[in-house]
Amino acid sequence: MDLDALYQDIILDHYKHPRNYGPIASEEVLMDEENPLCGDHIRLTAAVKDGVVQSVRFDGKGCAISMASSSMMTESVIDKPIEEARGVIRSFLASMRGDHPMDPEQAGDLIALEGVKKYPLRIKCATLGWHAIETALQKIAPHQ
Amino acid sequence: MSECCICKKCLGVTGDEGQGFDVAKIRQDFPILNRRIHQDKPLAYLDNAATTQKPSVVVCALCDYYQICNANVHRSLHLLADEATQHFEEARRRVVKFIHAHSEREVIYTRGTTESINLAAYSWGRRHIQAGDEIILTEMEHHSNLVPWQILAKERNAVLRFIPVLEDGTLDLEAYRRLLNPKVKLVGVVHISNVLGTVNPIQEIIADAHRAGALVLVDGAQSVPHMPIDVQALDCDFLAFSGHKMMAPTGVGVLYGKESVLEIMDPFMGGGEMINKVTLEGSTWADLPLKFEAGTPHISGAIGLGAAVNYLMGIGMEQVEKYEQELTHYALQKLTPIPGLKIYGRAPERSGAISFILDDVHPHDLAQFVDQAGVAIRAGHMCAQPLMRKLGVPAVSRASLYIYNLPCEIDQLVDAILEAKEYFSHGS
Image (cartoon, rainbow over all chains, first blue to last red; front, side, top):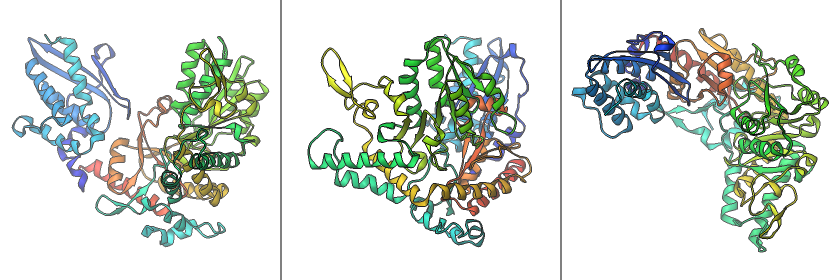
């Protein structure tokens, strides 16, 4: 079926077994992001130590694309120096906007999300968690 | 004509008892329904609560207006202007007949339900709502019958109160009666919920409100297209509805208001067409209904609405309602046994807007999946976020029916839902 381009195995796997997912105590919540169009909702927390993203966790409810993309996001930024993490986020959001294709070398599993671009209405689902981490990092370590 | 029109199952349900009612024939008036999409699957359009398809007669009415008698209305003195004005006003007369209004003075053209309600909130509300006054709405209102009143209440320090929605998707009428008191100036209620499909007992609600001295605005966006409406029998003070949900073009709708109520309202927007005499110092207003129709109206839209009304009256609204009831019954029968599927809205009186959730498959993923199978449904919060919160879900999927839908299109939906279940439980 055509949809396999959108729902690749790796996406369905992240959807069913989201990484770094679990309930967050309300005092820990750094970002509370909602997609008003569909009601998708995630909450996110993150910690940075010595300039390195130590942990990112999220909870909430959403479609397969938003949950899988958020899960993949956590794996893409954890253990990265904060500036490098910001670069990954910027690059992912730019590729979702259609500014440039993903670099298969660098993108790793994220390449699976390329298929979302064929479904413009779903791009917001794929970027929900990424906008949340972008703002969360800005709160923890304001960009100079 | 789609191949399914002639299948035996469909004929069994659509029957021919409807004295000349023939869904296959109706479908011929909607060429879009013959489309085949996503690798040649027949299109099953089940998103009619969002907008309906347009029959050829409506499209042709727009075409004719632009190609034969395009001119502005109520202004110029030449033949085209005269013809355009006649068509524009003839359409209004058809709407009058369609909803059993008293006269053309009571039918105001707007851009749609949302503008109709905003007009009432602005022009009636700002004249009549004072600090401490109360407005009763329901928990199942579409945002369009909630937000305008929130704006008004904030501006006037008025109070909004809400009729609760019960477990089965009906309104708590006892709670409603307890809410009524002399401070209540208006009751705003949706006739048919776009999420739950509930047909609210508005006749009773209106009678109670009137006894308490309040006026009633009915949001008829989901009812006027689907059942006979008689505003005089209902005795509602306002009725708002959209053209595009009843086969007419987008961008045109109606606010019905009782003449006595409209007379003592200030204009909504100022400009051309709504005036009588203008000097640099001040102006006087045109008579009803033009007082509320500032600027050049959506002429082709209104003419299209007239054609749509004509088309629906040709079928007969009793027939429309009867067929949709049968189809809704069929859909509920088919959807209910699906394991893990939960339907929201179990009112005994319900229409063909059916919202549901499928375990472990997000409504967006489901809508995307069934689209690939040729079935168009809606997923999301349905512009009813407070109701979603009450139901405890962020979003639902909704299939909504109209007079041209077929039982086998519902089967197509059911098959696609079963496939989606499988797909999302095992991977691809």
